[in-house]
Image 1 (tube, rainbow, N blue to C red):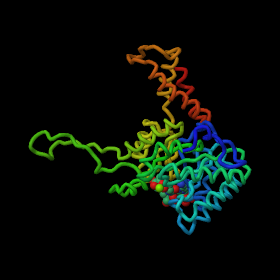
Image 2 (cartoon, rainbow, N blue to C red):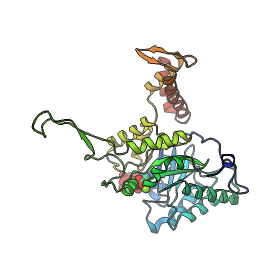
Image 3 (cartoon, rainbow, N blue to C red):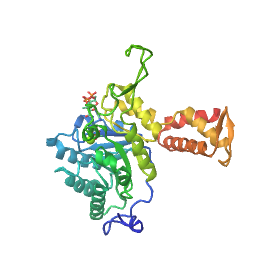
Image 4 (cartoon, protein in one colour):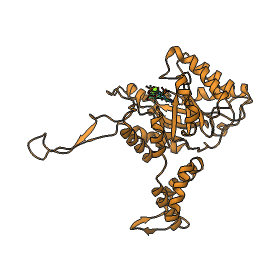
Length: 354
Ligand SMILES: CC(=O)SCCNC(=O)CCNC(=O)[C@H](O)C(C)(C)COP(=O)(O)OP(=O)(O)OC[C@H]1O[C@@H](n2cnc3c(N)ncnc32)[C@H](O)[C@@H]1OP(=O)(O)O
Ligand SMILES: CC(=O)C(=O)O
Ligand SMILES: [Mg+2]
């Protein structure tokens, strides 16, 4: 481990100073596209006004014989496209692949000033982040970048989960972590075949009412990802970085996608991945607090005055701890309103009634 005194020193001569705080910009949906797929890239100017983050994916879902085309496509897009207020991220290939090194060299030296965050897949431990950290510093120095690139890890191996706290704190570049349920399921040897979401076989059943073990017993499907998301959220919050739910692969099942995203939102995640344009609006709805919740939060903050003591509002006790929760909701609403004029209007409308 680096000495705490050196933690914020650049890792290469001429590299920009590391950030001391991760900028909290709206990132409710990280929208994936294949930069070598012309049908997808044609949609980007329109999607840029809808998605908080557009991510040029170079890893899984891009065929091996299209890896170089995807990388070059991303360079061209980054140079020639106006993404407006949307952030541009990329997911590089895994560090043990034949493409990762060229992904980093090409992207940082050619379009490092256009990229916000580099997502690194299959992170097993802090050693993977340390490798990327130093390499990025060298490349930033070579490219003359003034702003450090941030790093986002995908939590998708059993080792990664075991080491999630050290990954979250491995570098001042660490921006966030996403759950990668598909690779994680494979790594853990789970007996599922899906990309995220639940499974009807993972359930609890109410007790039998009599001798008939089959009669009248309700079953409740459980969330396969609860443990991992909760661990990831704690690791991120403890290190001042941001947690995300990853992909929901059943594109047609917009109802279960919304449920999975909402579970993650309630547990502390700030966003999720969207794999298809239809999922963007779901993420926007779920990861923006409702106007009613925002109105309530603002009311509690107002009535709590200096934030100490206890008061009763509509029969519910409020104190220092509940006002802190309300501040999380109200501050998120303010940040989102600055990016999203429709939400700003909805939040203003309830302001008057609360
Ligand atoms: C486990 C993981 O690693 S998850 C992350 C990796 N996976 C990905 O990135 C997958 C990204 N998404 C996709 O590849 C596609 O959405 C698929 C394969 C799932 C479905 O694609 P299609 O079968 O083309 O879907 P569909 O026909 O509904 O698409 C409608 C239109 O939206 C476009 N589209 C689909 N997905 C996207 C996208 N992510 N971004 C932009 N446009 C898209 C299609 O090209 C199509 O365009 P067209 O109307 O001009 O023909
Ligand atoms: C997100 C991802 O890469 C996975 O689920 O494997
Ligand atoms: Mg994966």
